[in-house]
Length: 235
Length: 235
DNA sequence: CCTAATTTTGCAGCCACTCTAATTATTGTG
DNA sequence: CACAATAATTAGAGTGGCTGCAAAATTAGG
Image (spheres, each protein chain N blue to C red):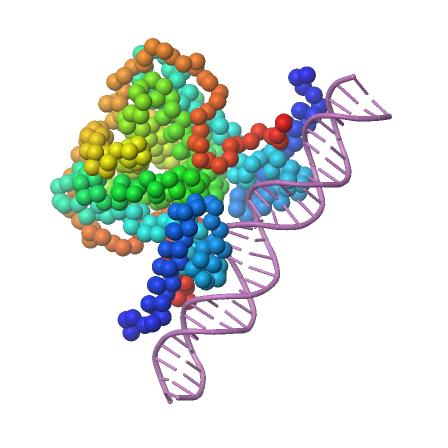
């Protein structure tokens, strides 16, 4: 029941396609590689590529679901008594300390960033991801607060935009040759200022009815056209 | 010299195409109208449409250059002694008072918004515009401050994201049936809270060397692929 | 008018992506 | 093991946005 040959082959095929694609993208740039070339490199048909990845961008931005739902998860999973702003600050600083990639800062972030910044299509995709991130966070905030509180809207936008700006600055530091540790240190200082500014939003600690820490279904943007697929239709 | 028949015809043709396109988009939705249909409606060839508008989205988002450079212009043109945050607040509240469209709030904003929210392509375009807006604002901030100040990055991101969130809330109020004046009033209150939060960024009033109020050339994002064209090449 | 500069157009083509209809491989069952 | 159900892969044709290029129409200026 659990693990047929079919399932394994599917995962392997998907993986192989994604790896081949990433290799080509890193080498020659996202826009200079056609889906047909990816298909040839992976020795499958173009249709098979689209069976696994709904768009060309999905070949690059795998695991995007994680980052989209991350902030919302942090907010939902925070301990009792912690404010929203404090929770995000904690997670952001933790990512800095552990060198985690979830805010875009990691070893080799520059190569990644180079490819993205060279491609309008990829930039558009990441803007979409930030939007989805903000919407997911907003949904999490609404689970606690009132119906359509403008403060939730503003707070979500400020948190996403701020951390995004900080990460962008961090990448620019890395690109300027600064080692990751040094960049992280400077980022910590700036992050402190940023989150301090948002303190006025953080007054409400956390209400009772805590939702289960990590519901897997993300709210998502109803207008994003296509979700990131994980494989061919299972009819 | 100034005004040949050729120039006039060009403006008229451009205008006619844009009007026909907007009519079709409003009626049937952006994604359900092909460029070929726009061309037929305007009685020109598809190539002519692309001569005037570099992308299909440009048919919808005309005058986008204004909104992209607006915030930067507000910052550059603010009076001596006014902080950046105060300048944007003043402009935002002024737009609310005068019912101006520059922040997306105006009579008929809902129809406009309906079309946009029904089209992933248009949403992507507006995300791009917000990005360009932020970059332009950041460039303006850098004309006064230090080289690559992370506080400028964060402030620009907060201002753009915050006003965007407020406008989105405003549109949701309009869509819920609230009259424009009432929505504007509630928006003023929320805007006050929002800008108050950003006060810590507003300490620097304004330095000496004020640049000329409105330089027309926008910095723009080097990676946006194509600028919004204003007509066929005059080469 | 006649020529040079421009605008418009038609045509061919690229690429992402979709749909449909075979074709092939994997599975569970007898 | 054979066989039928199921699911994955493929080829092929087509759509739509967009780009070149070269010919035809229009306009400008002498």
